[in-house]
Every structure is written in C-alpha cells, then in structure tokens.
Amino acid sequence: MNRFILFFFIAFFAILSIHTSAQQSKSISGPATLKFAELGNFKLQSGQEIINCKIGYRVFGALNSEKTNAILFPTWFQGTTRQIITWIPGLFKTIDTTKYCLILVDAFGDGVSSSPSNSKEQPGNLFPKYTINDMVEAEHSLLTNNLGLQKLNAVIGISMGGMQAFQWSISYPEMMGKVISIVGTPQLYSHDLIGLNILSKIIESDKEFQMGNNSNIAAASMFFEYILTTASEKSKSMSRDSFNIWKQNLEMTKPAEWNNFYTQLNAWKQVDIAKEYNGSLAIAAEKVKAKFLIIVNEQDRVVNPLSSIYFAGFQKSKLVKINDESGHTACFKLWDTPMIRDNVIQFLNN
Image (cartoon, rainbow, N blue to C red; front, side, top):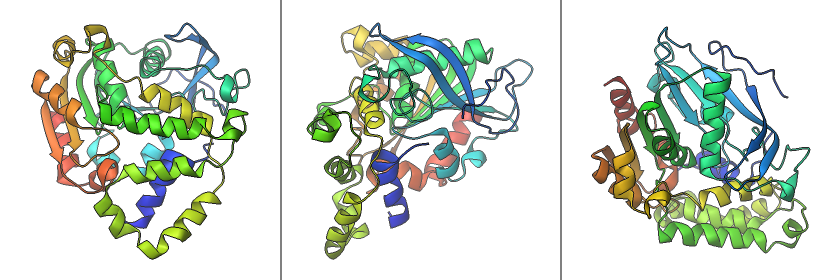
C-alpha cells in the first residue's frame, strides 16, 4: 500500500477534521450537489432525540418511471459522501448512473449529517448516543418521506456502510432486492470487540477529551493505524528508520473531531443484526429477503470476516474472499480490479 493511500486512511479514520446547509429538495434527479433533509427532532432507539436532525445526501442519475432503480450507498466509518466520490476509483464505471439512481447518504457523526461537531443544541459530549439502527431509520425517513421512495434496487456499503447495509436487510427486508457488503459485518466477533474497546479506552482516558476539549489523541490514531492493515504491509510501506518521523508528524497533526469519532465508534461496537434473535445469525439470515453479495478480506484486522462468511453460508449468498495484506483498506486498493468491480457489476446487472 503506497504512502498516499496510507496517509489518506489515517486522516479518513482518525485525524480528519470534517467540514451550509443546502435547501432540501424532493427532486431525485440532477447533479451531485450536497443536499440536506431536515428530520426535525429525531427519536433514537435509546429514547433520546437528536434535536433539529439533518441528513446530508447526494444524488447521481434519475429514477426510472417505476421508481425501481435507486441504489443507496451510506458512508463508511468517519467517511463522507464527498469521500465516496473522491476516494473510490471507478465508482461510476461500476455503478452506471445512466441506468441507476445512486443516492449517497452521510451517516450520523461524520461531520456533515447531525454530529457532535455541528450540532448547536447538543455539541460535543452533549450529543446523544446513537446506533447503526438509528442511522438506518434516519436514512429510511430520508428516502420515504423526503424523496418519495418505497423501493430500492440495492444497498451497497463499505466497512460501517456495509454494517448499515446488513441492518437495512433485516430492518426493511421487503424494500430492496439486493445488498452488497464490502468488508462489513452483520455481527461483531470477540476480536472486533477487543480492538474497538481498546480504542475507546484510549480516547476516554485523554484528559482533554474528558473535559470536552478537542486535543490530538495521537495514541488513538496510532492504534487504529496499527490494526488497519497488516504487519507485512506496514513493514513495506514504513521503514523502521522513518517511524520516529511518522510519529512526530502524527503528534503535530491538527486535532480530529474526536467526539464524532467516538460516537460512531460506540455505534459500531453494538453491531448485531441477530440481537432480536438471541444472537443467532442463522435465524437472522432466514428473515432476510434480499440477495447478497458479500466481499471480505481474510487478512482484515479491523473487521473479522468470519461473521460475514457464516452469514453467506446461512443465506447462500455470493461470497468473494480477498486475501490481501492491505487488510481493511484492500477494498479501496482493489475496487477498480475484476476482484471487486466485475463482481459488483455482474451482481447488480444479474
């Protein structure tokens, strides 16, 4: 993995400072202008509310006359819809927007949709806790109430976007025909929980964070970078002699919006589409109506692929296994290759 991609992921997952509210529109055709849907006071699973909730989205292409060609693409962990456009090579070669209406949606906590960093009423650590289910409910409200959609052709997601895609399939099993999860998961494994809880503890132990201040939590950035790829990849992309320079640069980097990061991290820690079925993925898979394409990397150290692999077996989904030392980032490195691009195109057009 080259240093360009490496430093993107440091920014993307750990040290990115995210950025107008545009008028909401009920038109579902046109360019990729960032728009906002105003959802009012949005009630969460916890019973709390996000006050003056807003959801950012972009639309490429137009609906067909039957309104059956929409594809939903929610954001990954700490990613934005702008990054989906910018950082996925060959996105529009893979998803033909002359045929499909592609809807990109910013998830809670990404700094565009309602987040600790942009909420006037609930800023910083006053922002309520939310879940992946809450993200899906907000996206459902956007699609049905603001855009007038009752059906989706597909839901596609990478990483936390893939987790949202899994949740869509269980929350609204009749709404979409196809789901594509790329390095996502329907249910966390113990390995996932260990890594995510270590990351949480590092953030929680920072004194500035405890006081509501936004300091540079370099240890959290460093740990996430440690698990993002593999030992083999890291040894190739960063020499032993350059480590101290990398560490110093990280420590001097502008502080990230750590409350955004932390709230999305807490949502991630609760991922389990089988929660209502006593944790049984087999039972959850029986409730799903959509056809699945599941793409995993067997060398992923951020999201354990086993849950996705088991789900694919229970649901008889199409499963693509990547074995790449880029770890969790392999989907970006390999998107514009037959491994991902051709499988996605074939699955959508089948």
